[in-house]
View 1 (spheres, one colour):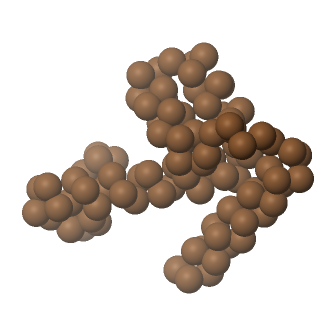
View 2 (view 1 turned 90 degrees about the vertical axis):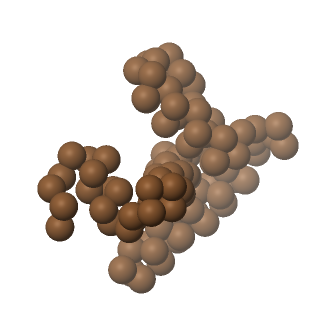
Length: 98
């Protein structure tokens, strides 16, 4: 598990360095804005917004942001439902209870 976290973090740091090196201005979107826009566009099946949000940050940064958003959403739903995050995640994916 820690290996996956380390690998994700390394990808995130590399993505930040790559963005810095490309000279993006201070008004560019951060990875969490990109992730929120991307996921909401996917939920609404809006391909133009999906493509737009996907271009705001590197693919690695977007992946990291989407993963973080998913974790936070599952935790929030688990608290709201008074269930474990594992139960909520499996339920959202239509998987049987473990």
